[in-house]
Length: 189
Image: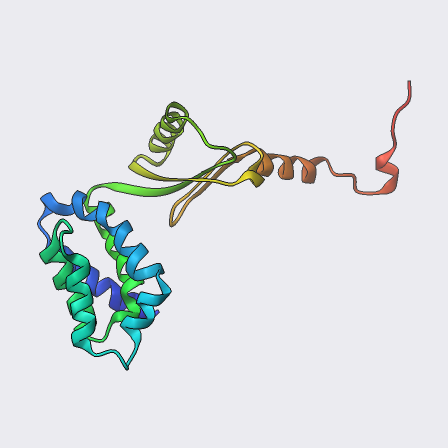
């Protein structure tokens, strides 16, 4: 919990240092940052290691941010996290920062999971219906899960919309499931 609070403070500071016209651009770059600094075990270990000098960590950040849009912004914020010994909250920082950017842009991120890959038209129809229901502009992270059988599941931080065939079948079987052996009688004509 303490790391979440600290990550939120750093994310709020990052928001203040960023002009609103850059929000969308930086939001699009967060996914890259999460992949590099949040999911790469090798990089996480290097940044957390007491045996790696801060200078080497800062050089890595400098090299990594070379040629990235908003290079100065990313270099400053990543350097600050390293210099303040906050490398352990980097992943949580990106999560909190992304949430703040979506909020500032009046958008909501949804993980939209289908049973099969869908064409753009189908995704757009579902997205438009979700925007109507949630009364927000949404950004979809599309995933596929064959266990759904059909339909979709939409999840955000606070909401789950389950329109999957699997879920409907589960609800149906619980609704009509026999309660005893005598209920399980087959009728013959």
